[in-house]
Length: 137
Image 1 (cartoon, helix red, strand yellow):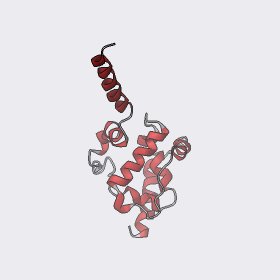
Image 2 (cartoon, one colour):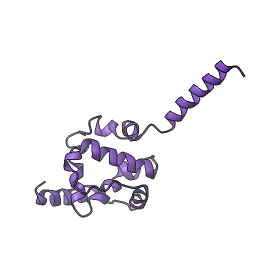
Image 3 (tube, one colour):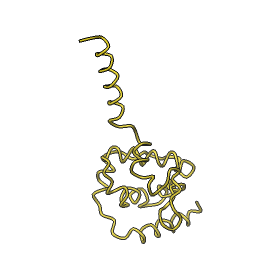
Image 4 (tube, one colour):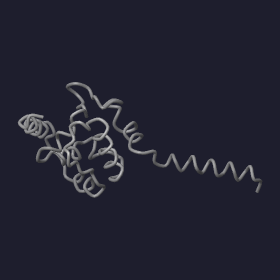
């Protein structure tokens, strides 16, 4: 085989390997930003903003809620990639509201929580927001 052919095979293999999984930012772009927008701001009254998402981690049930909402629970992403995207969202759009003792989501945690159906999203969100507001955050 010619050296130039080997070089091209090596280059193509390297490029393709990088495309297998481009990371949580790319997963966000492909799976989340269509509704939540590139900056995570959402659409007022329709799609929640991610700006203060970290506050949910400060109240009982909030951490679970983030994984159980349909956009997360029903995502086509693997449990591991979903965990990475959630952590990326929290760290990039909601860093100022994260608790000091923030523990990143794991694949195992996402897998367990995704399997529990959330029946009344609106009521659960309202209950959690009320708890967050009671904390003064």
